[in-house]
Image 1 (tube, rainbow, N blue to C red):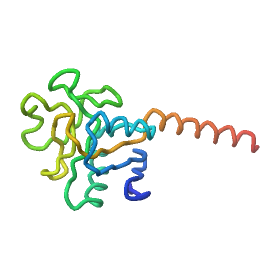
Image 2: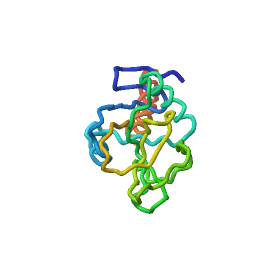
Image 3: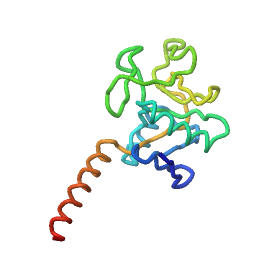
Image 4: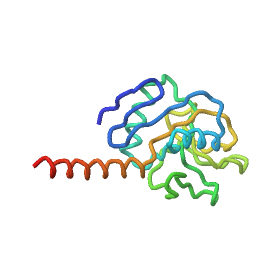
Length: 160
């Protein structure tokens, strides 16, 4: 699956939709969530190995060194039980850096790409100021796709 850059911040991931990468290191996790929501997006849920491979490729092509970027994962509800904020689903796939998550000083509850790793994840205080990755709202994307299929079917019926 080929990734197409729309511009420096926007990237099309094919079946996984479009992502937006803000590398400016000035957003806590909640501000990043809000920035995504204002774009009708959510903080990214990297919930499969396939999606991780595609996002990893985008990041490696774009950045020489891994930047700190918020993802949509957190364990704010129950310590050690990480979920994706966009779906509420527990992690079935993860890309933790060695020794992570460690909840250092009992204050690390939000997931991010960690600058000192090889494009792997770390848990960090949700108040840390870093960048973020948003993705299209998957429910809206799927609904839009379903509507397009139905529209195409109706168009074909009336074309007869």
